[in-house]
Amino acid sequence: MPPIPTLKSLKSGLENRDFSSAEITRAYLDSIAESSLNAFITVDEEGALVAARMADERYRNGTAGSLTGVPIAHKDIFCTQGVNTTCGSKMLASFTAPYDATVVTRLKDAGAVCIGKTNMDEFAMGSSNETSFFGPVKNPWNPEAVPGGSSGGSAAAVAARLVPAATGTDTGGSIRQPASFTGITGLKPTYGRVSRYGMIAFASSLDQGGPMTGDAEDAALLLAHMAGFDHRDSTSANRNDEWLSRLQTENLPVLDSRLRVGLPTQYFQAVDNPVLQTALEQVRVWLEAEGHECVEVSLPHTEVAVAAYYVIAGAEASTNLSRYDGVRFGHRCENPESLEDLYERSRSEGFGDEVKRRILTGTYALSVGYFDAYYIKAQKIRRLIARDFIDAFSEVDLLLTPTATGPAFNAGALTHDPVAMYNQDKFTVPVSLAGLPALSMPCGFDDGLPLGAQLIGPHFAEERILKLAASFQRATDWHARTAPCACIPEVLQ
Amino acid sequence: MSDPTPGNEIDIDHLARLARLTLGPEEKDQARQQLANIIAMIDTMQTVDTEGVQPMAHPLDATQRLRTDEVTEDVDPDRFQTGAPATAEHYYLVPRVVE
Image 1: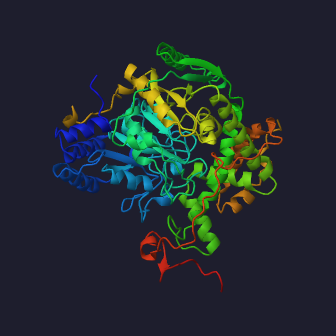
Image 2: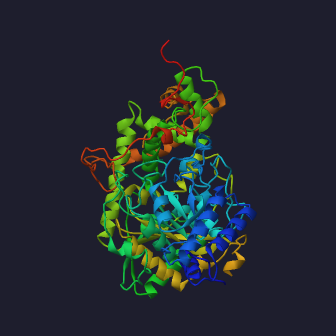
Image 3: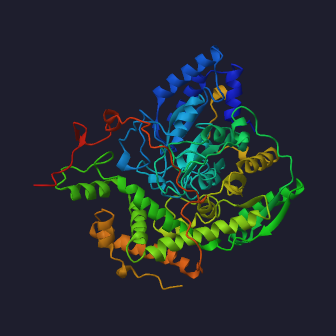
């Protein structure tokens, strides 16, 4: 099995002059042009090649930084000055942001070459990438299957080796579930770790950006460049974690301690796919062989997490999306008769069905007479779920769970049953409500489709999660397997 | 657990009006039915005893960060209004509201 091209291997190839940034950028652009996955909404060929040539110049004059010349892609939810940002919606189909998101600025400053913007569920609302205005994304392992969502384009692009790494965002599982469905590594950092400035808002108390990569080492490297305090984000965590800044230039340290890993009963009991059960059992066996201790723990409020999540996320979405009014930016209807008509028709034409559904759910939960029964109730349950995790972390260092209920499902299988689609997120939303960091890593296959294991840590304990994932990936090759349609550019072979 | 909210008890016109959305007759029927299913799902929350539990608005229970009240950035309307559908002299244009 040839090694997968990673941020680290590309960086070292660039340093050794094995290839130039212009060469690899060209090669990736060619692979994207030939791909039929629909993983990208916008490919910035011109901008990428200009940035690549500038990167090559920096290698020549000795000023290259830690990601200089390495191609990456951004989920189309991150604002990019001068390049379209659509958020997967007709509403923003021709929107170009007048500024860069903080994540975009940071990665640009580190020297990364942005090759394009990846496809996604409309306004990040979906678990299958089927709600995008720009068409669904195919799973590189099987074109009949969905890649997961909402960061399905980023996941498919990384899995098909169309780009070594991409950014994603996770509100209820939108990094982890597509990472699981496509056999890549995806990390949702602690809430507040990565700036939300310029990241189009869906549910502001849950939204968090993070890395989607080929392995945990790359996730650590990309996180180190994405994360950090930002005065422009009112909920940015003011932290100064030395381990994190060191990762910009140094390798992720090897895990040198024995951990207590909790296996939540409620999650394992809810898995009815025998292949997934076996895959998770093998992770447990590996953990114990490595000297870690596995214990059962209880997270008693798991079952109501999906309900509380869809109330909170819907309520925040209905509020956030009120800004799309046809006046300041975005789609505007033709010949409005009145201001009311302008608002209503612009919104009705600009939003797709799932977005309307979530806005209506949120509006219901926030409306007079229902506010206490739904919104406040959901916020109380959110606290109970957060407490469940605090109790668990008083006993264990990390938690191991499945990321999803099974492998990727087929396109069209759940589109007519929103509740069944929402239940897909049952293993990822509790973490989101509690604001915890969690990573999905490949741990097996079911009928040719990847399976994912989720590692959950206490707030700001990404280092522990990443070290354990890297240790697992040194012992296994699930993450290194390559999808049938993947094509590693010749220049990198 | 309370009974699922039947679709016919959801005032979809009122919700659409609050959300500034226009729904066609078929869209309305579908939205009403799907919303009834979603509400039945979220009603499972009512099985949980939350007596005395403080609502949680922020996952880290953080409070609003404050700063000195100083001008830190300039607004450049020429740049920030480039995406606006209709503007004139830095104003946003909308249909006439006052006759």
